[in-house]
Length: 625
Image (cartoon, rainbow, N blue to C red):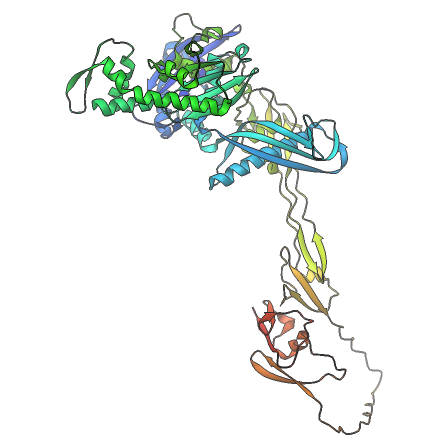
């Protein structure tokens, strides 16, 4: 251990964590190719991966460590940094839209475009979350702007154009957080630091289909044990990903059922088909030695191979629309005799246009002692090639708040991209103004504004940065998310002011002055004249002699009501006006100066307001909530 050299910056260590095995590749860039120094492969002793997803982190970590230690021993190097890839099967794609309202007509700059695109990506993630039920952390892999609009007019590019309302529609691709975190956790268990992460279909394409060939419409089909990952390119770039749940295990399980052998033996039979012409010796689950004819095995696997070829064709056509110019089959499953021809038939393509990957590996990778032209090496070699030859921007390390940032996309990366790729949302970058409070007071609509957000802290290498700042290898990002503004809040007393004297109803119920108001509340007031302040007496005041009134000739008429179930008789008002509901408050027995809960007013079983005029024999209810 003491004699081992440290892993220098140019030495690339790639690990392909597959459903059936872990493959490690160590190499170094030499000119425009990667020189492979060593390759090591080990199979899982039991199923630790389910359809490309890590199920047993400890077991995967232990196997990765074993592969690493064998390579270290042979090369005399201490491997510390590793490049990995996430399974394409976990990808989730969603559309999202966002609108940026500007305070005035102005020229659109790069920072506003960054905010607009970040908002659209966050909207896509929110839509994805709502479809999935429980919220999950999602990591952005990449996105494409489908459409810009400025003041409702479609645009190709917004920068420098002038307007007030900018909109963007995007199609964004995400990886669920558990996929990313489980891969990082397994590497930590193996004692390794993740230096880069990409996607398995991208990695395999980088090995099998070099960039100079991608002007053509081509498909890369990586047939693993649990899943089949597919990537398509056109006009120089990768244009789509998809996957099929049918893969090599379907073939293995058919052999198990037909010949009564365990999974490991069935795998050996599948591999031996290309090495033996006549008979394969096996021991079945009954402990009996058998010799199985190769043609009998071939017949057994025809149906699952047809199913696999059909699934591959449907997925390619679903994404591409039409058959591509050519198809490359990679992964261990691609070696099945007859599968290439079946895929060609399903796609209605010439058999010559469906090939086994490996012939193009030599354009990007070479070795002085190892045979590399194997289709099962597409992904591990692709991971190493991607990092070693700089085909992905995630081949360098960028730190975010002291931790290695998770990077997935190729091309130029901005600070906005990296924050989105690491689980932050548009609201974290820009912040949200607190919610407004809207109430209606005596028929007038009032809006109280929420408090503004506290801006985010964005620094790259200790210097202030913008969301549109381009990030380079080795940069250190410091980010403190924006704090959302507090929502607007008012009590009834704060709404009416300290000079208000009287009573008020909120949503047709008398309420105390300390009642918090809610969105949409309707407030009605009964303003009263405050009592005049007591005047200091300058001396004794003689009582005023009562005015003479002639005796009443007739008994005054009365009004008969029912208040809270009891009869109430009141004299008619002298001016002849009716009694109103507010007049009944003093007869209710409720202390309105010390209310601790709302009061409800009803007339004949229906909620009414202060100004409701009462009629003879009306039944009035004034009760505490």
